[in-house]
Image (cartoon, rainbow, N blue to C red; front, top):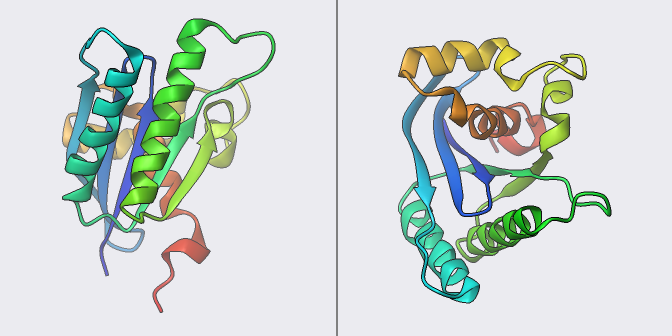
Length: 163
C-alpha cells in the first residue's frame, strides 16, 4: 500500500515542502516539491494569513496520510527577528495542518541526522536514502531538510501501520 508523506520546512519568509509517495517495501518517489516565498503585504499579520490560506489550499488538495514539520531552535541565545518570524510561520503551518485534520509530527532541525542513525555533526545530505530519492527526482539540495522530515515520518511504525 502506498502512502503520501509531506515534509515541511518553515523559514522566515518562505517555506519548502516535499511530497513523498510510496512505502519502505516498494520505494519512494517525489511527485511534487515546492519552495513558497511569502509575498510582502505590508503587515506581518497579512503575510501570516497568506501562509495559512496557501497551506490550506495547496496541502488540502493533496491526499496526504502524514505530515512532518521541521522545528527550528528557539532559546534565549538566538531569539533574533529572523528566528521569531520563522517560528511564526511554523505555528501558522501547524494551525493550517490541524484545520485539515492532518496527522502531524515535529522533528527538531538539530536532531534530524541522529534520527537516521548518523553522528552529530553529520549533514542532512549524508542520509543515504535521501541522496537516492533526491538524485532520482532531480531535486536541489535546499529541499533536503523537508525531504528528511517526510522520510522521518515514514519510519514511525505506529503512524504508518495499516489497520
